[in-house]
Image (tube, rainbow, N blue to C red; front, side):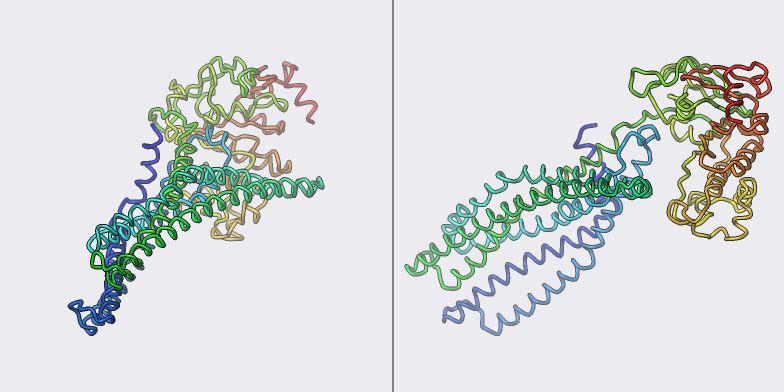
Length: 572
């Protein structure tokens, strides 16, 4: 899809169900233009009437017309007040909702390769720029353009010759847009890119605060933050300088235009040419301001709009890059099992992390994957969950190749429990249900089976867990992760080092809970070589240097006295 079509998908969100508010606001602006032009006309009439020139209107008539104009101006302000903020608010809400919705369609594999700071920047700073420079500028551009055209039309009615001169003078500021327009778009994009880096440094500094303190790396952290902060502010400074230059060029050219037309008007009035009266001189000066001001501001607004459009393109490109091709729908069931054939995988395209893996996980059975650090255990589990692409060989779910299964279908089949459980700063219930509606009996059953009954009994299911689950222990966070998976009732449960950071007793209880679950295919990557736990698995896969070195029940592996026997003996 080309850039314009990508952008159109996002800009369409501004208008969905939002055209009435926009139209009402635009009517307000159009009426406002009419009133401003009428005010200029009234000023000319007042001046000429005061000079003794017969205008066809009495002073009382002009006063009454002025009152009508004030009433109309108030009406315009009311239309704009009620409709413009509503349009902007809904447009930005729909834009960000759509962008986030499209982002969630990405696979885990694609998202894990990306810098989340880019999205944080896009949804915050970039969105603010789009609101100001793209949406609000629509109204400003229409207002200034109509004022310009209306002023030219009125000027033409008074004096075609002076109007022609005014247009020639007004062309001077147009060159400003060609001088700095493209540079402003580039500067805005540079700010966005620098801000991504800043967000990344800030996020790392906050997330790694304890590491920074414990390694006494405060000075280095401050230096990284300061350099990134400086880079952002310098980029902003360059953008402001360009904006100032453009504004100064427009203003300077506008002043030259006004002085030029004033001199001509004065000359015509003194010499009595073309019916130029003092009032006409005054209205020409008034209207010339309405002509030169838009010419001074429109180039900057167009440049800002172009830079905002570039930010929309940037968001679209980020969201639609690295996307996984959507596969086919498959039923949310596992009847035969998961089969791996000749599986090889490399992160860098050279060195294989996994090599020639062949195995079948039969439906309804429990499997442990063990091995030394770096043997490929977690990588294998990630491949089973489509966490990485680019593997060779086959991974099939009931004889359907993983590459041909849609993301929605796959995650109806599998649930994943990882070592680092993400807990939202919300209630226990919301963290279990992931903010969705479930029957109370199903939630209660998941709480019971995951061992959360005591926690819920003591604190209540509406207890707020805190940021990243700060109000919970490691074991409680893991049990919430188990409850999430149980509530979804998927036929496959993948567990990746879920208890690595927990004490031995808590680890034993959590893994026992997992292994006691019936009618599930359970594949567990574990470092915990506990005899009583390992005996509960139907088979233990032993990985060494990216290959399955051996597999079998705990007793079978111990009888062989090979690699697993050594691992187990050393761990005791």
